[in-house]
Image 1 (cartoon, rainbow, N blue to C red):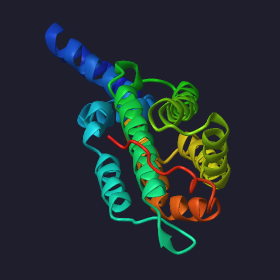
Image 2 (cartoon, one colour):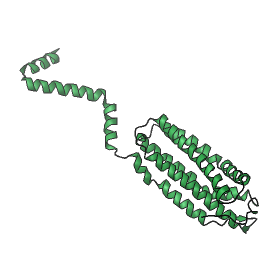
Image 3 (spheres, rainbow, N blue to C red):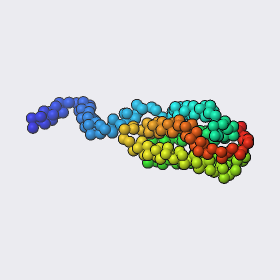
Image 4 (cartoon, rainbow, N blue to C red):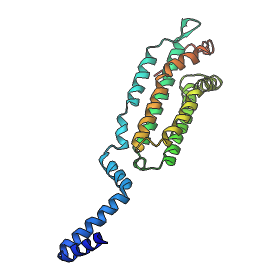
Length: 232
């Protein structure tokens, strides 16, 4: 009671302005303690000036260029002999694959809504991007091989399906990692989540040369009948 009496007497001795300031400070102190977590998040968000569009300069896009250079340096063989048709075919298809991945992710990263999108929506949009680009590549690869390179639809479909089947382990692993990344509470925002997602994509791209060699070693002789294909 002595404390309350002291406070009461103190307020009684203050002028109006000083009383207002004191009460305001007490209220602000109370609010700061009660909502300290919310205030901390707001301040942290304000300090973090990174935007999702900055990820257009992510190292994943450099990996795309590196993969193409590696593919161009590989001479594919059939029964240990250099196969010009197979080599040209592979370079054409992998360039198409890399370009499709690069272009679709660039389109994704410029979407303004990504910055503050909730995690469920982010997962859906990334998953849709991946699904769409796979269908786009498969359709375009079939068109290129049949219309531009003189390969039968049967052989073209066989090659596309063989490659996708071989790479299924990558797709499954990425889907699992995507779910973990999106739900992980350690990421502060969508910039962090997408940054990690792009690293995962980069890893899947970096092993394309190994997967391509393994896939085409399994179709030895199938494309030997084609004496020439257009690459340009």
